[in-house]
Image (cartoon, rainbow, N blue to C red; front, side, top):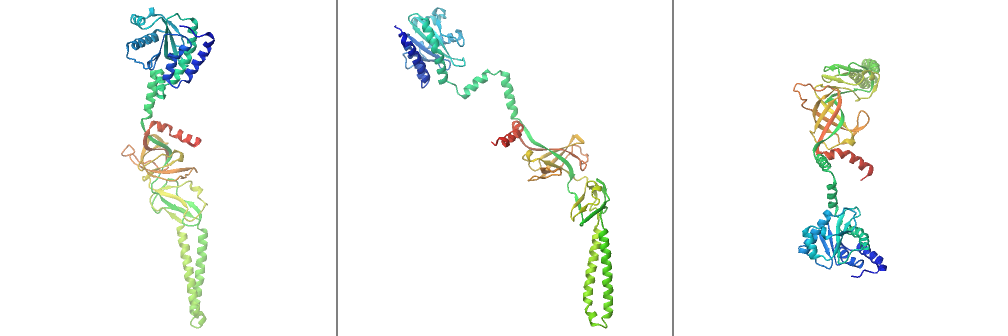
Length: 450
């Protein structure tokens, strides 16, 4: 066979590189590798073997039969060279038939003429994607080896591009390189993310009266004195506080004096009515004035009596500092204190709007008191405000009321009014992953707006 002229070698090399890069698919690229490489150097036979498909292309053959004896022998030869040949990045290797196993050496004498070059094909990352076997009758020159060494990276890169694995294949290959203990740890972590847990929220809470009797100011005025102390046990009808009645007493005395004056005028007019017609005509006017004065006196007496406020029922007095009320002006109906049954208590919690979770009626509530955090108080949700309201601290929050149920001990008393702590309100069961990332996701959505 004659070799291409030296001046055409470079052109043939560049043309082959261009054909390899522009091949429309793996089949066309295989044809270029085993057939069109002849334009660069002369050979008798060429075969392409790839790691994914095995024996892929054979020069001069359009319909490859992989089950034939020749194809089976070629496949065995390639696998032998892949196991015993040079590693990644190696160049073309002169194949010595005498170094082959006996079965392959016999096949070489039967199927192959002359000597061969084994050309490994690697992708840009150095992974073996296949190999090319080129056989000719004559000896191989160093120039032939250099030309094939120049073409091998181009063919390897082009083949890797056309046969690039899909996403799942790349993922599988990547996972195969990960140590087993890391995969086990990852699987355990993913499994833990699916463990069901209770979605809960913590909120500041207090023990409050369930149905307290609210005591309000009976009239406009100033509180004169408070006769009870906070948490004092009071009886029904016991005086709680008094309003300043100085003004009322003065007005009552004036009204009584005016009533006495009108009664005296009526008596005199009654005596004169026997002799004077005008005096008789004034009797009706004087009687109406007396009725008006009597009504005024009765009203002032009632207000004076209501200025002393008594307990509507027995219980515990709930109020702030009594001294803060002394001398304080109040309006009619303004709340001053309340009287509650110390045994009829419930839990009041304030849930921040940012912490709200779906809560159903009768949802479990657990109160951890500040004075006794090791013995929680069990309760169930009774009411939850729809809209956030202002709490005593001035912040907006949702008010939750929970009925105290079993305390763990049959004879355990109800917690004392006014005790504070932290309440845990339990919602539905959710995966652990949602429980962990619920708030970070909410913050990310508020921040990034997705």
